[in-house]
Length: 147
Image (cartoon, rainbow, N blue to C red; front, top):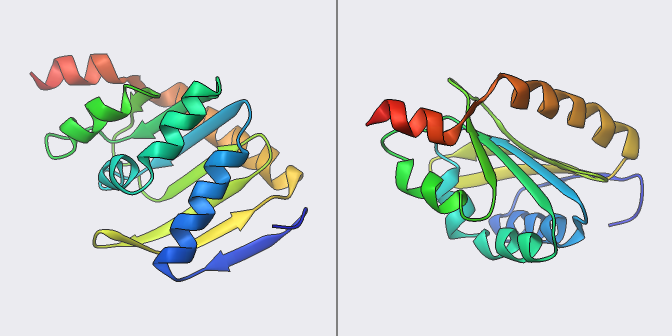
């Protein structure tokens, strides 16, 4: 992907490949904010990218709504990311130091993905992510309240 570019992808194969490229390009920071259905996708189709990023020393922060239905996936995510709970999260996006991706999900699949590597956009979306992170509850607190 060329610098200062925005693309929209629609095929599942292109979307997964773009997510994998985003994961591989991330050097220091990766923040994900996703609805309660996406943790299954994260530990299913793109888990290796998280594992590899953690091995490279990338700080991974992950926000979702932790529910009884996704609890097992969330526990898996906690192995490679710092996880927080936020009630009613809607939408799916991830941010790194240089890129922003946002996806639309229908059923079990992402049906479109916007990928942007414009630094100003990444900075703006990092602010949004940081604001949500401050409002979110650490996963261990949420899980303890669910028991």
